[in-house]
Length: 423
View (cartoon, rainbow, N blue to C red):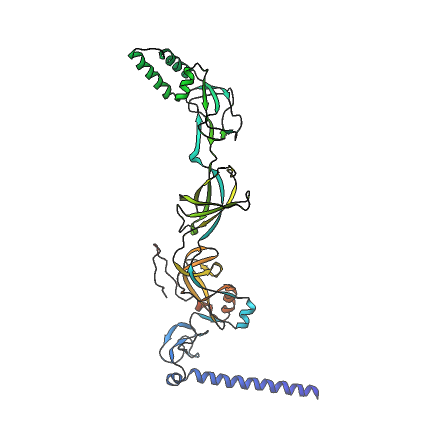
């Protein structure tokens, strides 16, 4: 008896469900076929559209041209929802379960606070190459290793050169002559020594009877490169050493091309190094080098930094903060809200109550995790920053994402000018 009663109850519930479903279907069918005047009495109808092709609008109710058994659906004034073309609607509980997060679109000037790694290097404008001006032998070498410190005027090497010796002997022979012809020859001999690369001080030392020619440091600094050893014979033009000053250094940073707008000579920067924690060096961009690295698509920025105490050494790593000038105000969205689809970029705008719409946008500069929107958004919208692809999966079950993909897209323009959206 108990089993029989269970069967009866289940059958009654099934019959009731079928009855309510039938009544609801008749009511929905009669409502969809309601005349335009009756619908307008409740809500103003903008148009009717084909649910199989939402882009097709009709000015009267009727049947779908693609599926005659399906009624056209009305679009009411001010109404949004899954029936609206380009909009997908997902139950708010499902949206919460998917972990969808949104962020508000704010209108402001992009914070041009660019932070990039850099390295300290020699100031090559203060580099001096010491070379052999004639064939010579290095009689004495006063600096024996790279990075030896030198002072301006300090002896760095003594050279013996036959060509110099002959010219110096001629100059000495004419030094005591008093006739006009002898003085003219003396001037010519002195000019010859200048052509051979001797300075007035070196000529004066040779005139005093010094053996060989002594080379002296032209600046305070260090021996950045040493190419010879004592006793070595060198030919004319061979480099002996390179001297570099350390009173100033270059700090060079590679800035991504997308972050270059607003950065130019004179832009203020702040430099920090891990070798000197807690210290910040203020300076300005000296030059933006006119070349873009084809591998990294970055452009090099050069900063000349005073280094009076020689605490900054070439090769140190540094961090550069570039404070670029503030530009015009634009809607700003988080970088993670952007969806790149090849030639176009889109964001998904949250409409509320589980409604979402894909909106094509034209992007500008990026900095600090935000990107400028030059066209497509006006501000104060809410964009999806997490779960866009989960929305795509959820919407694909009903085919609504196809409607999302039919929104207007910004046509690319070669000179970057604004082009109105195309449908």
